[in-house]
Length: 394
Image (cartoon, rainbow, N blue to C red; front, side, top):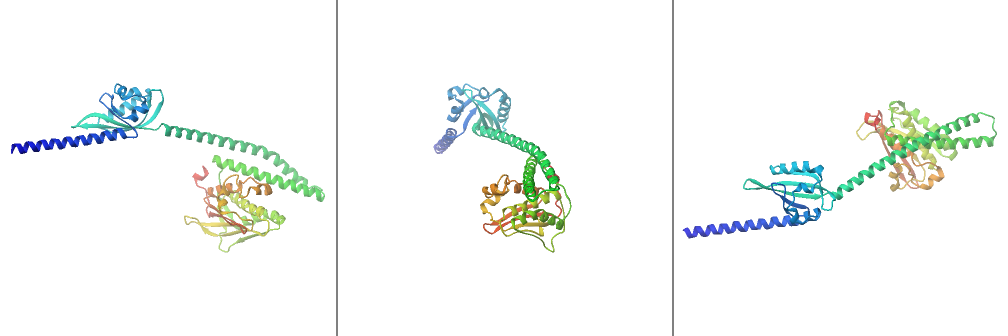
């Protein structure tokens, strides 16, 4: 019986030793093959073990690391926080810290470090650590942040320059338009009157461009605000059509306004900005349509949230736009066909401004088109298009 018991005890010890050896080999493999810096510290913070990655990034071989405490590898400004993290880990509180390490060559690395206590028979005997080198990622984030700040500063400088230049241009333009109106009331022959009309149209076109640039600058700076006042929808349609009629007549286009019987007749919004949006859309339609018609259609609608709304649609029989170019139309300084800029003028700001204004009013601006058939631009506005405080501060 005693021999049997002794053999059993020896077999049990052999099994325990084999299990311990297996676990030790498994731990050593994990320690050595870890792609991150892996190390073990004793109670004084001195390195006991360190894998090859630790030796490689620190620049110290294992023999030297075993004579160093971890704080000898840290810049002075991070030592207090790192020492606290080590003390907390020794107190059985696992830690995750972002810190820095100074290598043997003096290079400073950014590290994410995890520290856990090593407990044997209920006692903490060491602290095990894993450090991930974040230097490249931190540098990239720093560079991206610097690039973002530089881009914002350049954008602000551009907006300020455009705004200042626009103000400078408006002053002589106002003088040109005022004096041309006085000349129009004087005794002119047909040729002089025709030339004066060319001057007036050109000055008005330039003034619209200047106003667009100012609006873009205000929108980008978050300083363009909208109001909310009662408006008559039929009066709005008539105003837009009267404004566009001379250009449509010169182009030989049919200009039509259609208000459906059940369309809302009242709207609460910013009269200046709603008129600006519709005149821009109708003006574009007249400008780019060589034959046929331009129609301004008004109907009842609902917003995406189910609120009652009014919908304005500007439909033309122009050249149409490819699907791939539709969305880019709403980007600043963009036109579907760059050659149109030279033929018809404009800087490609109008639609970008229109979308911003419609969104400020809580509405939606959409476009659809068929090449060779024509285009449709739809504006849906809630009947109470009062801007929220967030919109006013935008």
